[in-house]
Image (tube, rainbow over all chains, first blue to last red; front, side, top):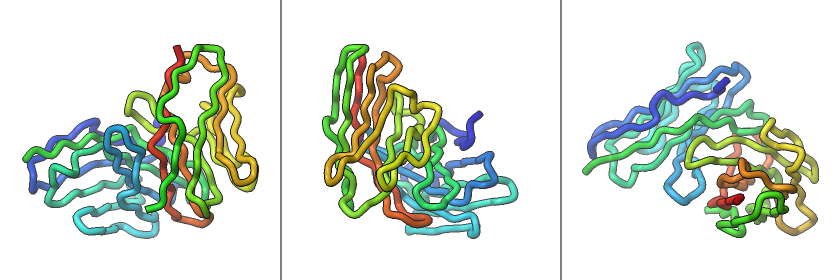
Amino acid sequence: QQQVRQSSQSLTVWEGETAILNCSYENSAFDYFPWYQQFPGEGPALLIAIRSVSDKKEDGRFTIFFNKREKNLSLHIKDSQPGDSATYFCAASADQGGRALIFGTGTTVSVSP
Amino acid sequence: GPKVLQIPSHQIIDMGQMVTLNCDPVSNHLYFYWYKQILGQQMEFLVNFYNGKVMEKSKLFKDQFSVERPDGSYFTLKIQPTALEDSAVYFCASSLVGEGTEVFFGKGTRLTVV
C-alpha cells in the first residue's frame, strides 16, 4: 500500500503560470511533510516543508497548502520558470527526529518558455 | 550548503560479489540514512543509523545488507552477496538530531549488478 501518493506523474506548464502538485497520505501519525526537488543526476534537495500544526507555508514562489482532516497537501509553484523543471517529491514522516522519510512517486514538472 | 559525498558515483559488479558503497556525511550530523531509487522513480527508505546502531529498517533492507560507521570514517552500505534486483541508485543522507531538521542527500551511487 502506497503511504504517500502523488496524483500526477508529470505536469507541463507555461512559463509564468502556477504549477500545482498534489499529494495525499494514509498514516495519521505523519506530522512533517517536506517537498524535495530533484534534477537528473542529482540527489533530492529540500525545497520547503510544513508541520501538521500549520495549514500553509510560504517561501518565495513556493507555497504548501495542508489539509490535515483530508490528509492531503499541495505544492504551488508561482510564476514558474524553466529552471523549475525537475521532479518534485512529496514526503512524510512521524517527525521525532531521524525518522524515515516516506516518499511519494514524484511529479515531473516541465516548464515551457 | 552542507554536502554529503558519495563514492563512487557509479559501480558495476558481478552478481554474487560483495559491494561497499561509501558515504561521507555532513561533518556535524549524527543521523545517517540510506535510500534506494530505481530508474529515477520513488525514493525508498532502507535504513537509518544513529549512535552506532540501526534505528529503523525497511523490508527492502535484506539480510544481505549491512551498515556501519567506524569512528571518523565513512558511513557504508555493504551488500553481500549482490543480486540483479539490487541494481539501483543508492542515496546516502544525513541530518542533525531534532524535530524538523533538514535531511541532506548525496548525489547517489549508481549500482549496476550484471
